[in-house]
Structure formats: structure tokens, C-alpha cells
Amino acid sequence: MPRRTAQCETDRVWRLLLAAVEQLHGRGFTGIRALPYFGAVGYWRIDVTAAANLRSGVNLPERDPDAVFRTTEGGFPRVGGLVVESSTTVDDVADEILRHLGSPREVIYFNDSEYCRWFADLRRLSYEIGIPPSAFQEFHDGWRCGEVDIAPPPGWETKQW
Image 1: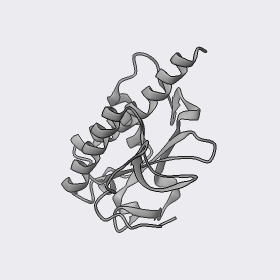
Image 2: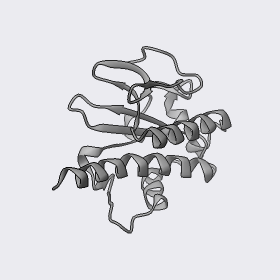
Image 3: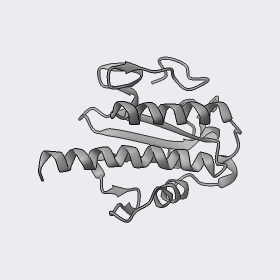
């Protein structure tokens, strides 16, 4: 696969996943939280869960690891049980995330418009910079997009992992 095609696919996966989380917020599932990061082998990853599954609604660790949607760009074009094709929409990915989160009631438990605004700003910034956001990576702690430091989500405490 030519490098440019591989880069387009990498860009597509993180953009699609961030858009899907924001889509779920827009549907009223304001208790959904996303934790993007880079794994040890360099692949971008994202964990999505309900605020009710996190300490104080934002912070790690999760209470129930089985109520977390996890995916990595290394597994693309598979996102959960969905194989992403050219016709796959943001709604399709949002539905796949929601299927992995358990009870919809828990997903709306925290009505947190402040977090949803923060996430929309994070997504917008990452699109502008062209680099996915991360809360941490192997050699760096702290929220950033590439080399740009960004404010953590409301309620985030440092050094949780």
C-alpha cells in the first residue's frame, strides 16, 4: 500500500471515531467519555465509556473494564465488530460504540455540557492541526495534539495511571 494511502486511512480512523463520539453527545448521550492515547507500539487508540464507569466521571481507572469500547488504528478497518467501508457513516460508527457501552441510562447519567463543549473543541483543534489528540503516550503525560499542549477535560486529575 502506498504511504499516502496508508496515511489517509490512519487519518480517517481517528477523525471518524472522534466524530462518532461527538455525534453521540449530540444525540443526548452526554455521559460518554473518550480517552485517546498512543500505545507503546505507536498506534493511536481510543477508549470510550460512560462517565458513570469512571472515577469522578472523568478519571481513570474505569470501574468495569467490560463496559469500555476500545479500538486502535492498528485494527482498522475494523472498529469493534464493524468493518469500515467507503460507505460507512459517522452514525454507523456511533451506533457501534453505543452497542459496547451497556445501558443507555448509564451513558446519559452525567449531563455534562461542559465536557461536551470541551470535547467538541478538542475535535476541532485536532482537525485543524491534522493530528489526533492524546492524553498520554509512552514518553509523554498530558493532553496534546502533536506538539501542541491542550487543556485536559473538566475534572481531569494528573498522574492517574
